[in-house]
Amino acid sequence: MSSSILVTGGAGYIGSHTVLQLLLGGYKAVVVDNLDNSSEIAVKRVQELAGEHGSNLSFHKIDLRDKPALEKLFASEKFDAVIHFAGLKAVGESVQKPLMYYDNNLIGTIVLLEVMAAHGCKNQLFMVGRRWYHAQRNPISATNPYGRTKLFIEEICRDIYQSDSTWKIILLRYFNPVGAHPSGYIGEDPRGIPNNLMPFVQQVAVGRRPALTVFGTDYGTKDGTGVRDYIHVVDLADGHIAAVNKLADPSVGCEVYNLGTGKGTSVLEMVAAFEKASGKKIPLVTAGRRPGDAEIVYASTDKAERELNWKAKYGVDEMCRDQWNWASKNPYGYEAPESTN
Ligand code: NAD
Ligand code: UDP
Image 1 (cartoon, rainbow, N blue to C red):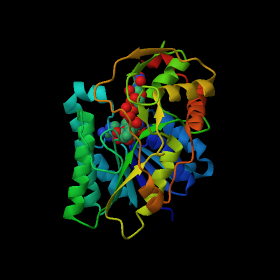
Image 2 (image 1 turned 120 degrees about the horizontal axis):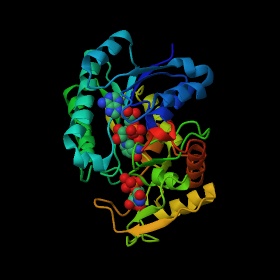
Image 3 (image 1 turned 180 degrees about the vertical axis):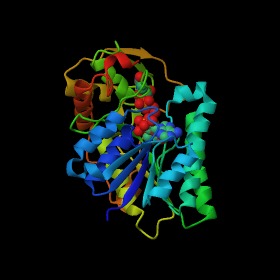
């Protein structure tokens, strides 16, 4: 019988791509999502893309903080592992509404861990943010409530493992996921004004926004703009499958891996690659540095390559090609234009 994986937040951007790779890899995937920042259409499309494996996907509209509902799910199914993506992730919103972020991300995670423990399910992968880390070293700082929820979640996981070493926990730190499934059928569909570079560029390209504002042109980088480690979302999804497979290794306790490409790309280089892929001109407006932004962030990938036997395959040209394929086929994301913005 195939292993059954619970994926919280599985209707979201990274979750939907990961669920598809799980299904194609022969796993059974059970998605829990409250659809707060996603659409059930994404789940349906994943099911279609998975073809004959599509019947191994089930969806439950549950808020993680709803303990009785989660209890009921765990009582009805046995999970071999949990991949935890569910959470709110808008940095600016977290500054405006800190309690909403602490409540959703921390209480949601604690309830999930309690229910897992009660049902003897102690295999899990946790996602943690990227901005607060340098390479494989420890967290540097969190400059906003969203970032702090991610740091706290990581510490909670370490404490749980300290208290009970029968848990197996893999903490994945990843960098800047971009792109979409090559089919153009699933992709990123953020609500409101996008915070991140590529969703914004995509919305300029389809005419939803007039220009991209470049935050900072005076960094000590090749062209003065910020440098990041962009990773194709399908590579990232495959990294999660490699980590799920790693959970079977008896030596796993509480581990941390970086999922990046190890290569840095500037804002202007990303824009140029997207213009080439789409044939669209992206008008630019320059502005000062965005508060809290780092100059250069990229991953050290040696440990993931060595121990997970995983390495990113795609470069920025493929990322931009697939992002444009998704954007041009779905300029307003999963929903009709009148229901967005
Ligand atoms: P996303 O918003 O597309 O997906 C998160 C999903 O979680 C959404 O479908 C949302 O509806 C669901 N959700 C939120 N709160 C929930 C709750 N209480 N109960 C049930 N479902 C809930 O985000 P994503 O980009 O796919 O990111 C997934 C995870 O990875 C998040 O935890 C995010 O913080 C983390 N992460 C993302 C990035 C990035 O750049 N996208 C980078 C680093 C870390
Ligand atoms: N960026 C930008 N304009 C935008 C969004 C982002 O110039 O509208 C820049 C940002 O300053 C950073 C890079 O693009 O140098 C990546 O930003 P993103 O928010 O996507 O990722 P993060 O900074 O969280 O790594």
